[in-house]
Image 1 (cartoon, rainbow, N blue to C red):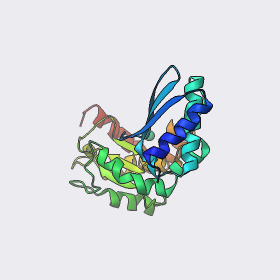
Image 2: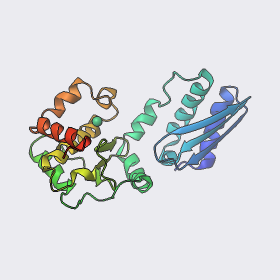
Image 3: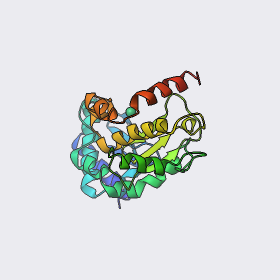
Image 4: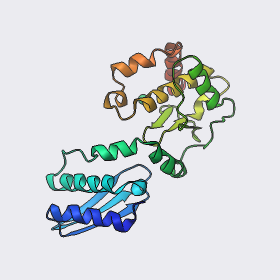
Length: 228
Ligand SMILES: [Zn+2]
């Protein structure tokens, strides 16, 4: 467990190496994993996502040095060193942080059971069709608000997927929410791959393995323009 004191120490060490005599670092309960900083002459203050507090010392040390590099070079360098990325993709990161992330998320119902449809059954259907492999850490929920444009959301980092409750309606066929869930599960299984995040050609190819993709996309366009 990384105490705030230890966090501060690593940032101060990295600061001294980069010519910053006064460095402070604190945890902050951001919803998403991120870091904010302010700097002045010879000083820098960091607010670091408290999702980091389960990390090993070397992960935090690498991160502190990478951030100081970024602060002094004014960007460009990768702020997420390999050991940090590795830890963020590990099961223990999800175990430790997923429930906190869910608690901090607004606009989710925190249940896969909708008025009409159950996302766990949708997941089973997709698995049965051979489209996905079950990820037991995935957290599925309907949204509270019936969003019509952004009908699905996936936090790859926290393995949380939310599907718009606008799709949990009597007049929307089941394959529409199944398809949106499939899309988000593709993000989940692609991890941090930047191609997948931008819906690259391979992602689109996979998406079209769903037998109802064309009809589902027609439905989503109709829902988005409210021509129901
Ligand atoms: Zn997407």
